[in-house]
Length: 476
Image 1 (cartoon, rainbow, N blue to C red):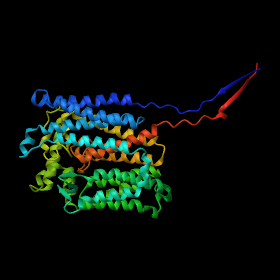
Image 2 (tube, rainbow, N blue to C red):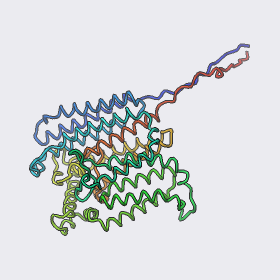
Image 3 (cartoon, rainbow, N blue to C red):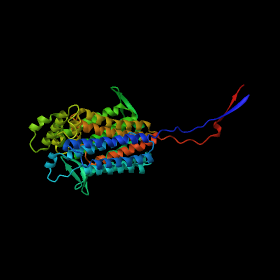
Image 4 (cartoon, rainbow, N blue to C red):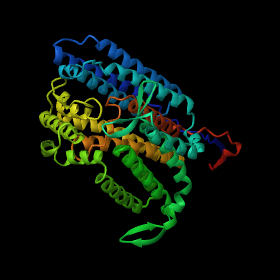
């Protein structure tokens, strides 16, 4: 009889970091915008644009710095988030530069200054914010400690545009503040802080909110005392809509809360109640607020509205812009007119911000629109995948909240520009001109990358256990 001794080794399964995959995708994410830049230059002037090398080097340097930081401080993060954000940001810079070259836009403003250099600066600040998030936020669970502080900070950010002398009114919406000669949109940063508050609050209260008192028409209705949170959030979103005339932030604010509430409780009744409450609030405010009424009129029939609206009024301006936007999409067709060969500059004010998606529709056609929506959909899908992979409930809710906020913003902007819903005044993430938007969305990507790194990081190997030795007796 012989005795064979086997030692069982217990250890962690090594997960691939996928950083080389991210680097290869980043190369494409930089090359595609540079090729688009070349295309625009050849279409407008028939020659290679002089700033192409500087643009390519600048975008490549920013992407390289972001990649090195991820490789060092978040080695197990999702490999698609950074390349997708870089590609969208780079294409946004090209579209803004293309509109800067329009003779009509240059002639329209007596003191014209191009916006593309400013957007490149904002992009650099955004990537610096991205780097700061990864360096300072070692563990996303630390944010849970600041649940109620984040609520107070979000309320301050949302109310800043109402402060006399600080807030500014742009086409009826009070969503901007002026600080040191710079315009800032606090609502873009408030969505990040609100996601932290909602995650921390719902993680603690989800059991109470999931309880049902009665069933009505197939839906489990919550108890009366548990309606307080959603009624409070609904009231605050209505206040934003009434006092700031900001349909986009109000919809984003309330919609993100309903999404996270559904994820936390798994109760369909919350979604139904949220839809009914948001619809009721929009109808009431839409029938009383002139700014919202003009957008609804432009949505229903911009061409008829343009005939009947008083000249030099906000309604006439809204209807004129919406009619130009629809004609831009119509002239684009399936494949588009080609980069640099469209007429979306006729939209006028906010052509490179609120309505930049119309340039995509005209110059790249329906094909380009679907490709861009696919890129946005991939970011949302990777965010949801990160939420599913997160090991803690706070991380799951936070990743889902940020992904939901991003998805809502893409939906309301694309839907408003294409005539599916009324315009909301928000900007397309990464694509549109605006410092607040690009900086806040880079911070959002940074938080998602930090959560995904924690979720995909292999667990540490336990210490060797001498009791794991097994003695097996082999009979002759």
